[in-house]
Length: 128
Image (cartoon, rainbow, N blue to C red):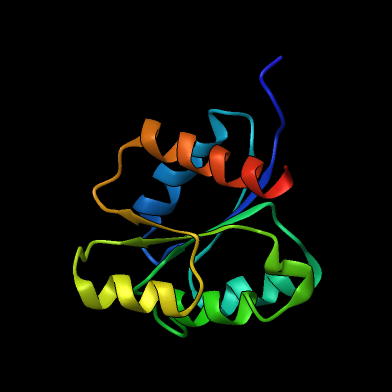
């Protein structure tokens, strides 16, 4: 028994990163919905409630901070952990992530194993 399969929304404007995240996360049997920007993420979220969201901070249309802050204002979506993906390891990014209510910050370049266990931990902590 490989544990639960979850639906994870991935938003990143770089196709290579989207593909990599799909490969990493689907290794655990999760269903990955990948979109290219924040606006597309919100479109998906209008009718769907994923188990977790992985949002790139720097995207056209609408950045990950903005998407996260909107998600955290919707009661139906509030329970889904949001991981923000960034190449910037600085105080401004960390402060902003806290401000919008992100559950975790993930730094690029990614460690697949680390990411998989953090996603799983966050989802399971929310369900407990």
